[in-house]
Amino acid sequence: METASAIWSVLLLIVTFFGILAGAYYLCLRLLRVRRGERYAVILPVCGQRFAADRLYAQCLRAQLLGEGRQCAVIALDVGLCPQQRGECERFCRCTKNLYYSTPETLPALLEKLQKEP
Image (tube, rainbow, N blue to C red; front, side, top):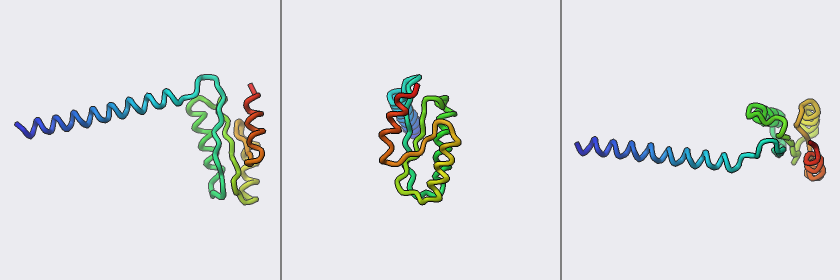
């Protein structure tokens, strides 16, 4: 009888723990979420990675799947790409909507430009 009580207590403790964890996670997501209609930018630093364009495309897909494709601008921040990768990223950014290529020097101007766009 004592063993069954201990098992139920442990199960109740585990369920309570996961309930509190899920509630905290939900609260954090609600607090950190951007308000509807506001534009925001996701800056992805790319530096010598083999699949930089894949990371950029994955971030664009995430925004589209969340229904925030119009509000989300993805910026590829070049912090050390080789010329071949740089050309590939620039071409990819020109072909994709809401995807921009920038260097650390041109980033402030790009952010100002994006902020002024409707």
